[in-house]
Image (cartoon, rainbow, N blue to C red; front, side):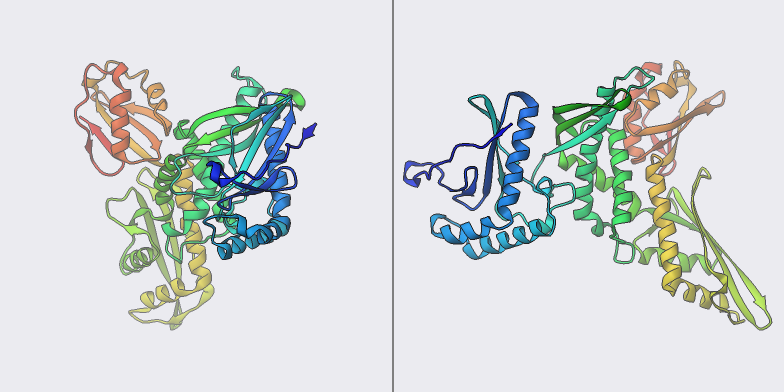
Length: 467
């Protein structure tokens, strides 16, 4: 059963205390314009804390729907150091957001430390002055570049696994993954467009949701260190032996931002080689550069393009194909133009003219951009580029344990080990640079080596040599 807090009294600034303007029993303004709410729940422990927090946040949201603006206008003279015009504009924005569907859970409140009052557990929440309802994400977070950490409340679900993990363990892992996913989503919402130019920045819900899923999956698989600490708030039983948990997790948002930035660079601003005959290669290379994609002969991804002129009488049309693949032959995307779009009078320059028209057509351009974007996302989603690691056998004490050791490196997946009598060859996916992978290998391979490895040499951006 919920119990409202006792009314606070207006505290004198002359006593060195913070004055509060109180509305109803548990909602009001602080002297510098922040809005706070306070509520209590009967009992002790995480469940009581969660209930009190939910009640306080709900009361704050109700306050924003109308009473907040009226109360500030009535009590404006009681505040110190507050720009009344800016405060009223902020409150009007919050009121509009509340009336148009901004939920209580979406408010980016700051949680106070729970305290005991009789048989109740009480919690205060504060909405900092200046938070704009339009900037609040669907996950209830607002990105603050200056903050090192952010707290999120998430649910996780799990059922017993055949590997021996309990339903609760799996639910907790699911909750932590969702916590990272929420922070990734807010960062992506605030930063996505700067990683691609206006042509490639398809800033719509579907694209952002896909990228959010890809980034969250990769960040979760690369490191568990993004969640600094967490606490269990509630546990519920689900059918078939399942468990649902509610967690409050503190996520290192600056670490998430840096890792997301690195991964997003691979999606939005990749480096590719172009393999095509002239004049096709020049057209494709220029078009890619104009669309924010760096062209380099040493890049690990190759965009292969080939065109075939179809001549009929005195006219010619163009059958144009593009393929994205890595140097190991893995194909990530294919695109083909619509040859029936047009035909031009045949001439020595008809290939150039047809290419120019096809790449200027909005429908054709969007289809090609979509193919490239999905191909780059697929690379990241599958675990990054395929890297090759060559190690001279003279450095290896044993190669049998090598696959298992490689899989312990954060971000490594799809490991295949082979080689010949003189060299061990490992192929693996890794969402990071070859230099980062080489450093991780130096640290991880100790148990299967005869001695220290030599300094790594890089054949290119995806081949690492210890020879």
